Length: 120
Image (cartoon, rainbow, N blue to C red; front, side, top):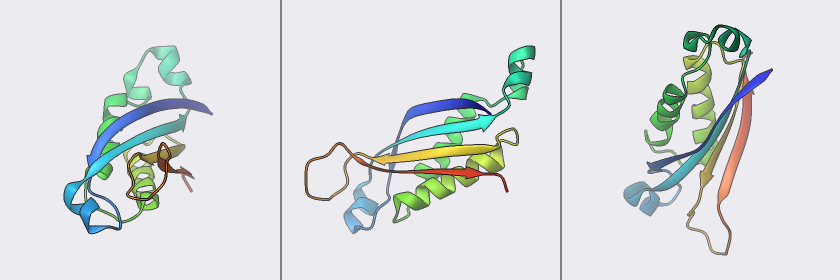
């Protein structure tokens, strides 16, 4: 299966288990990998045979900048569902959501959840 990567997408969202996160919001990043047959697009130079990257960004944005949820896992699930339902040529997707500034003590770069979902 061929893959399309859209990485380092940046958003502002209001997710988390703490009230302050829901009020103030914070930065979020996302990476997605879309699995599909890219041959028809490559052979025919046809955007309609593949996935428009700008539309991928907008679908991820709808979730991460959308209704607040408590868990990063929920953001991943909703993002994967949105991508699979929006792009019929995509057979599977991997979604990684990164929370760079969680309100937990310690020194680290970020916390993240990554999932892979495929059509059933």
